[in-house]
Length: 188
Image 1 (cartoon, one colour):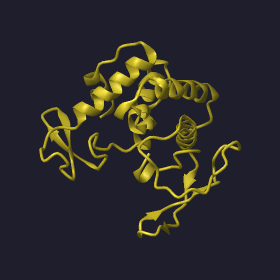
Image 2 (image 1 turned 30 degrees about the horizontal axis):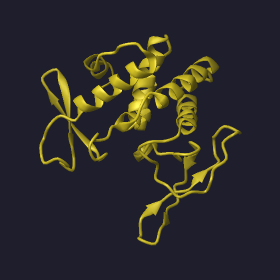
Image 3 (image 1 turned 90 degrees about the vertical axis):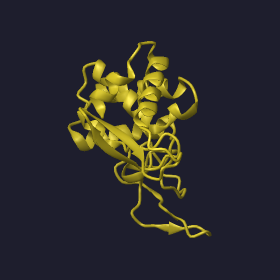
């Protein structure tokens, strides 16, 4: 993931606050060994996170996020690890983006009876076209999301594409249909 929830896309380790600059002046951070599980070794790569992380990195991010939100629960950790691996194997394209996997995971765990309301604060919505920031606008009883950079030159709602990707990923991974609009109402 990128943004305020960024982590090492390979190991899932937290990133340092200290910035390191490459030869073009771009600032990046180093993975650190802070509250990562004992089997996670930071690699020292420079990164600001990525759109798509390894299954291992997402599992580590899930555990760290859940630990910050409440007491340890091995049953949800095991269920999440299995679900993340299934979601990552379910196909390619933009649906493998971390935020898509994250919300498909949240839905899977919610349907299994786990408390997952906390998950919404551990992933940042991004434009499905350019991965830029989104601006949310209330419309009637709902909300629409528009790309801040206006990457397509139109003010269309990017939310529909996001929720369709999440629903498609969920359905492909678990052979259990989910409706994009239902997800949108629950998580947006």
